Amino acid sequence: MGLRDPLSAEEVARRLESSGWSGATEQISTTYRIDYDTAMRIVAEIALAAVELEHRPDIDIRWDRLRVSMTTHTAGDAVTELDFLLAARIDEIAEKHGAAAA
Image 1 (cartoon, rainbow, N blue to C red):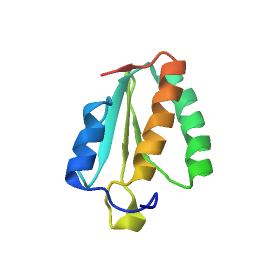
Image 2: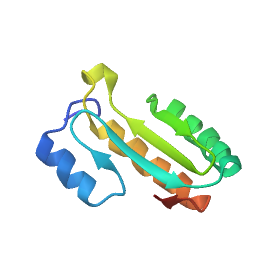
Image 3: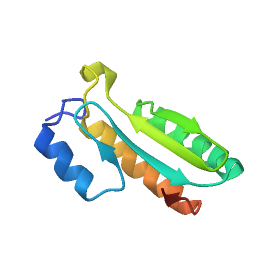
Image 4: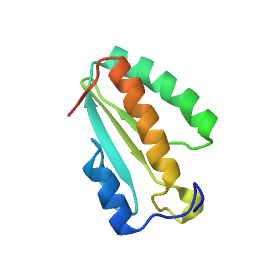
């Protein structure tokens, strides 16, 4: 199975159980509690990971939280292995900056 092949509903559910992310076969997302200035630093690092993996998340920054969501558009707006790879990288980046899952 390739990085951009859609994952089954069962596989997405299994993978979400062991993560701080939620969603379904169309999209996964998470929210971190973090101040605005730190969120901006996190987003800069997410951008580097996104370029490296050639996969772009949707990002929403508020004064006290950062929400990230993903789907693989080239797979018909489905969740793929690529989404979970980037999710793991984002979690590492957020943890490094002290962001807590909301």
